[in-house]
Amino acid sequence: MAFKIEEKFDVQAPVKRVWEYLIDPARVAVCIPGAELLGSQGEDTFLGAVKVKVGPVQMSYKGTVKFTEMDEEAHQVRLVGEGRESGGAGSAKMTMLSKITPLEGGGSQVVVEAEVDIVGKIVQFGRGMIEEVSRQLFRQFSACVKQHLEVEDAEAADEPGAADAQPEEKAPAPESKPVSAAPLAFRALWAIIARAVRRLFGKKAE
Image 1 (cartoon, rainbow, N blue to C red):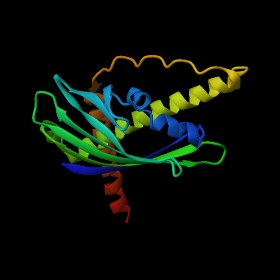
Image 2: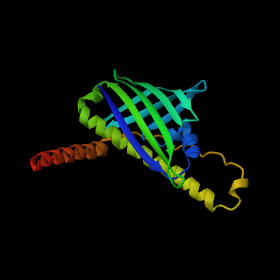
Image 3: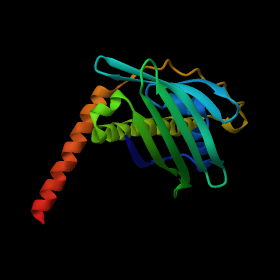
């Protein structure tokens, strides 16, 4: 099953700081539900795992993420992620392009385009459900990125002598917990029903 996702979000932080955040795998992994960074292979390839729980069934994927394009001048980054289901026949591949542009007032907008191809038992949930759950996961990710960047900016602005302070060591990432698809699936189903109702009443109005 192959599908595309296009999403965008605004964050009240300068482009340079957003760029530095999005090319740091350790910081990005913290904001991906159920994800864990396991190590690296060279400068641009990283090992990782993602856990997904659907009711009593838990699926774990392990694989690699590789940065295939990193254009600092255009603030554009492309990565390819591939993973296989642990103990199963499922697999997933994703190519994602992210671009950061400045907003008036010093903020930034992040536009993400992703192409996803999945194989295995997760396909039984259907295209519409999987696409909507993927969007819900992306919104959780974007909310986490916004929180980290905007809180850090606020703390830096409030702290006297912040410009002269030495950078602090990063706190260790919290233990990865499997993301439960049940509440996400409920919200996804509700979103699908709502869109269908709007289309139905829109046609009747015409």
